[in-house]
Amino acid sequence: MSRYDPDDLDPAAREASRRLCERLRAAMNESGGAMPFEAFMDRALYEPGLGYYRGGAARFGAGGDFATAPELSPLFSRTLARQAAEVLEHLGGGDIVELGPGTGRLAADALAELEQLDRLPRRWRMLEVSAALRQEQEQALACRVPHLLGRVEWLERLPADPQPAVWIANEVLDALPVRRFVKRGDGVRELGVRPTGDGFTWTELPADDGLQQAVAGIEARLDAPLPEGYVSEVCTRLTPFLRGLADALQQGVMLWLDYGYPRREYYLSERHRGTLLCHFRHRAHDDPFFLPGLQDITAFVDFTAVADAALAGGLEVLGYTPQGPFLMAAGLDQLAETELAGADAAGQLAISNQVQRLTHPGDMGERFKVLALGRGYQGPLSGFTLADRRGTL
Image (cartoon, rainbow, N blue to C red; front, side, top):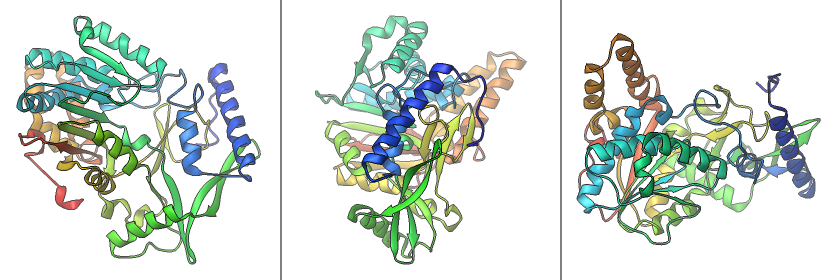
């Protein structure tokens, strides 16, 4: 994949990547010739004006680099809306807070469904730092639910006035920068990045106390040391990240949807090269040094680590299940049945394919998980009634 250099790449995009590479090389030179991968991933994704999520290029859907569930089918967002409506009813009303709102499709389709159910939130609050993405979100909402724009509020930081709420975060955790490490006979080494020719390559760096303790904690949970040469990731930002979010949740439920595993599955021997995953023009690969700033860089989520961080922040773990059973239990089957009844043959095929992609174990149904965290919520969570795997965390 690193040799794939598309001829039709926009010259402005290529120039933006070149400028980002210059900044990265300068930062490495100032740091003795290399930087930890976590710092590289952070800047490749979030460098102001040049990072993947801070530039102006299309990222989602057919014209971007990957398609998230809200772009695949409105049934996904409508089903989430039903779960949110159940929570809001037992809270006596409140807000919905969306982290990483992407194109705005999830908000638009969910708000339309909530209106149908007569369960509109007081506000739909979208936490978004990208001006380009905010513009895209506003356009999606204005096209789909223009009469509900008055309920939508954009935030650049966590709410300063916490209210009872449902928080929704679809494919957010996988974009948190991770630290990469390799086990050696003499202990742990951190994987860093150094310049080479006109690109970048891996290099080994001394592991600081924080990384060594994080890997020791993983091995303690596994009841066994990781083998020589084992490469993987750990997200040491999770605990402060979740603590900040926990402080902003007065009462309610957070729904986290992402691809990942519980810890004992995350660090299996067959995953000895880690879980790093990059996306460019709907191609998935594992080369994070390809066109920095123009491709997505992610890592699978260690949901055990997320649960631990949530508990440390004073939240409860209310449910954990694969996406397929969650969506079916939350009402996807009823929604699909209604849509199928009113569709022609081509429409029925499209709807069936959407449901298949969202729920089948061989597609998103098992690879993606749903984790519910909460504070002060004693009501039902229908999405976890078919399966709840909290015991595996």
